Length: 210
Length: 298
Figure 1 (cartoon, rainbow over the protein chains, first blue to last red):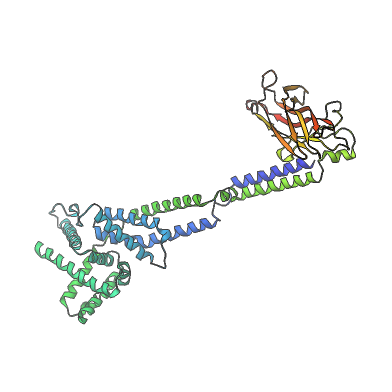
Figure 2 (spheres, each protein chain N blue to C red):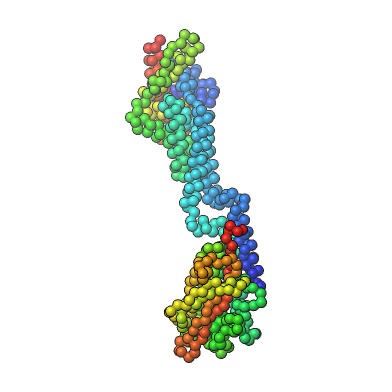
């Protein structure tokens, strides 16, 4: 008498358990601590990307002078950041400083790995001269840009970094000082001198082309 | 050096202004080289390239998917087998409910509600434990070993096992565990339990006993298993299990028809350790089970 009743109760409870298992309960793991941790990890990374990807791209683009390569290297930078995000600590460096350090290393590796010489590629140069003034003007501007990059590539790497971080990434002297591990006043001095050096180098090309 | 420092500082400040979209303040400086350098700085700003929005969106999407996949992999790897097994509320409920049922059955059992001795105390004569007017329900594993008693007297007419006499100090309990139903062709797997509930050691011989499979509805024995040649010694309160399997083939080798069946254990001799007396032990209807019709039929 009592056993069948107990057995039916047992079957009912098992059925309820099965329903709970299969039914549209709360999304799996949403309530767990582990999921919360992952969520914050993903939020941190998304925030980093949204705020600093343009700056990283501009810095890299300034250094390599080619949009395709700049995109590849930018992707490399953020994949490295993703792999090491667990080791990142805001106490040690701001996201901008951290990402800039990764970007600098990535660009250095890029030039070092295949023994590339840091020059602007020939295919970035205008190929033909048009008779139309507007097109001619555009080609002239492109050639000027190419020459600017060539001149930049001729500077010491530290100077290239300062100019790229300043005019490419748009960082202030304090941020550049943190990224390059020098004093802020040193950044001011080196920036002025590097720009003058670059200007002189470019002026030589301008004077020669006229 | 001081004037140079001023120029460098002024240049940095003016570049900051340019980056913010403001006009530089250091242009008034009486230094042609400075003004020219500042103009050049404007050109440097002009060659800056912004990322393609499509590229930015594509890369973001790829990275976020990758991160989510990594998180999933990490979560799966770090989850212990215990968490995986019992971490889900449904499994927890199932475990708790199982424990509750088992404890409840245990308590009822311990209270003697199902004890044959208790029933016999108020009702002398053959035990009705395996008999009864109504059809007993198929046994479940949780229902604990069913049993039949062997006594000095032989089984009563009709084959019902006899309850032990009150004076007897030893008795053999025969129980069984198995599924309530089996699919057609499925191996019928039943565990027989032999327990010596008495104070003295006992030897069952021959062992294993002969076993019959009987169709409850027709009363026909569809399969008989002959007894073994060995013996089984059980000390006081000791129990032993014997695994019994039947492939549903009848005595003629055909598949047994669907229906309800019972397992009968033939009487064997149960000899007390000291040789003082010899008790027969056997049980009818040790367990009931059902053979289901082939799936093609419904």
